[in-house]
Image 1 (cartoon, rainbow, N blue to C red):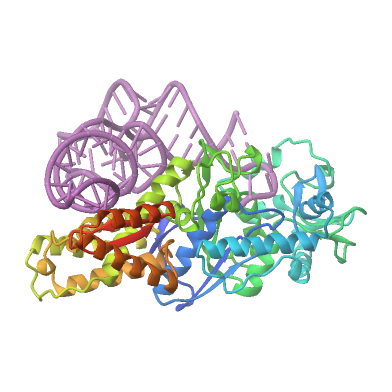
Image 2: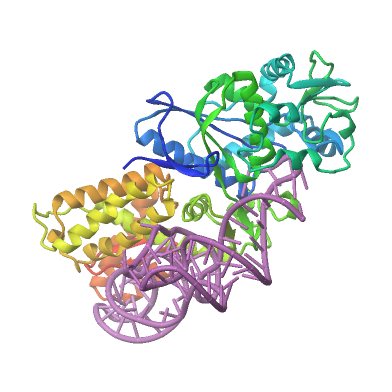
Length: 495
RNA sequence: GGUCCUGUGGCCGAGUGGUUAGGCAGAGCUCUGCAAAAGCUUCCACAGCGGUUCGAAUCCGCUCGGGACCUCCA
């Protein structure tokens, strides 16, 4: 079964066929590094990390480009013609680039914790001013952009007369043109729907670059068009980002690129849905963001505890990427417990070797396991339904635990089935979903724990329950749980 | 106001017209020096009202909620 993805442009699930196999070009809108990343930001980067991982698994040669927006856009277009990054920098009395560096580093750190693979190219907006200016010049030459008082605007009305502006976001151009909003600077534009490509910088504006139209800074949408074109070409396979970027950002990107490159930029547009808090989108407008460092530490009124990055990743992957995901500390705690159970079973599976036979004793179980494992691929192929993949894994958990406890005989399933189970489980959990055991421990700790397990076993065999209980009790206080298994072994895990 | 999405059991969430989603929480049992874990069993659903259909959580209509975008936003 082939991979099918939901294409926001056509509003349909389509079979994924790369433009130039085996190469795949993927562009994902990256962070604006004027502040710390919050939980909501984790969604796209984890979603597209899985997309990236799966495409690699399928054998594609992927170039994954994710930009860093370090030039800032308008805080509110027209209202304050100020660069987002520089205004915050003034507030904090630091250099803009100092701020950019700080939040870029923090972003990288947080997403390493979340086990996302690095993109192949991570271009910065400030590093591509030349390309952006070049593209704007092309737009002017083509007659789709005009200069006013040192600023350059895209002529949406003209574009809409020849192309479908609004196709991606379902916008009606006539409505956009009629929108009556009293914004400062609007009078510069020919139409209210026009958007800025280049903005003249007022004297107090720190971030500024020389351009054919005077000193200024790039508009909001041009950076993605310029960088995507530079690194992926005029037409590439996947463009990803949050649903909230569909309009006007992606719509405008399509318009710019279409004029400059004479083709619509991306074949497949993929958009992840939002993370909500009490039903409301997490974001600036509601002032309800929880930063990733707060998530990790638990230092936030809405959090009862800190959560490991892997729990956050797991939490996000338990939902389909196009559904909203409602955050609560309770939901995270539930995810944490579930993930612990999944990984404990996975650890057992990894170590398990069965001396089974060619023919399964329990034919029914054998068929069931085969089906559950085969469905991993089927589900991920169905527009990356990670939730269903995880659900199947959970269905396998009791089987693994029962095999460990001897409730299911090792020869119940065939050697082939077992091998397949072990391999697929590992590939999908670690390689594709990118999850790993958060309680992975050092060699040293493992050695110490082996010793304690041995001592406790000895104590138990002598019925010295005082000693055995003492070991267990004190370890519990240290956050390590010891469990007596049915076979007489003792296992342990972090709480 | 415009465009679009959505309403699933205590909570989070899958769901392609006919079959158990899954996780967490709850109840019972088994195992067990104790504990924990685990295994088995089990309770609790498809916002409301109509319609289509042999059959609807799933399709259609209406009503009532919720949300996103239209402005920086993942």
